[in-house]
Picture: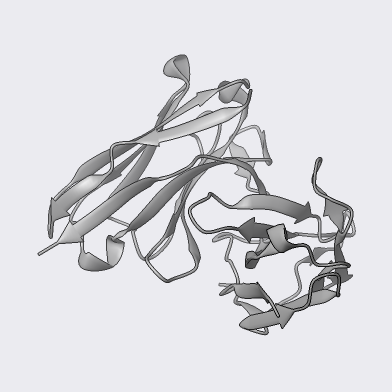
Length: 113
Length: 126
């Protein structure tokens, strides 16, 4: 199974500042035949279901604010929030869908400093 | 509006069973693969099962294999999860989630999950 490891486990950032969350997979999730990284990011707020933010590592889901961006390739990925807003307080998860089971990272808790 | 609504959760004793349901609306259910994902209290997200659009492809996480059974009724736009031999560690919120993948012939490919229900809570007590 592919193991996803996020860092840090928790993060406190001031409003308006940049937040960066990292995700590392135990093997590459880049599919060479189509040059796509099988990696998604989700936002999970307390009491709400997960929300898809980014897929194919860098494609923003419709309706997601452009302050959210995904980057990386192969085994190393990053979710960046360019200017943190109060409503961004949540736990963020990466997930690979290169192989079954589609494993999640352990989550990164993002708070306001 | 695209919507998934789970039901069927509750309080059950160790070793008991439940049947979770997920009602889909606002999209063509028959063309989508589906997943169940759970979150135990204080824990992260755990994918537990996947079913292709025609039920030809089914996968389970090792943690539930042999105890849980996923199924769907395309005529009723519904997804199900039969959960048997429940353990304390199965206590969680169970979410159904639409998969963005596709099927080619009898083989289905799971991708990211783009629509999620609000979840149903299963509590296993001794």
